[in-house]
Length: 230
Image (cartoon, rainbow, N blue to C red; front, side, top):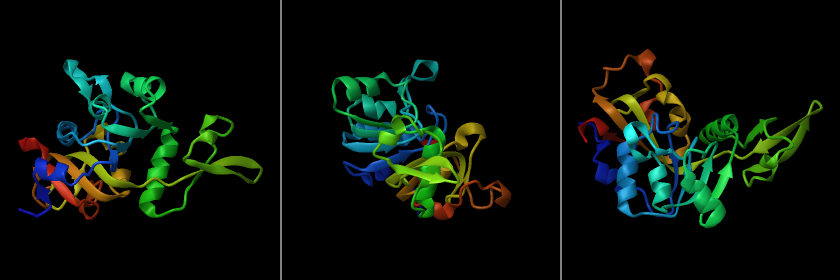
């Protein structure tokens, strides 16, 4: 088998305390749940997590702490960079009451482009979204520029130590095919981290995914966990 395929335990061992981690998914849809849960059980902490959201305190079928909300609940997270945290009350409690969590909220489209810029090696993203709002005060905002009479915010590119991504089908080289809306943030995150670990719902052989159906190239993926066998 291709040497990109590793065990869940090996994947977690690669992620150190204090790592900055991108997590694909949208309220848990398209998230690498096996890796997240194993990381939650590892006791590692002081993470900066980057993603659309922080999962959900109450997930499908009554699952408690669905997605990365489990990490937040365990106080393993020091900073959150996200677009929406309303489904995870622990973020509000830790961030505003206990003051143990730094929370940086960014408009969704801006965050997607900031991650894309981080993966492409660009110096930032110019966007009109957030002009005249508290987004201007974010540590991720580098200031304003006026172009052709219109004001824009210059947002920093976002890069991570580790990206944890997921796809419905992944071959042993790492080529990924996403089912439906599970694509969300996964493709751009797979380009924007030093180490990219992909969790496969279904691990298949090279050639089982038609070339035109490859959404993320295996060239972006360092390691694969076979989630279908866990």
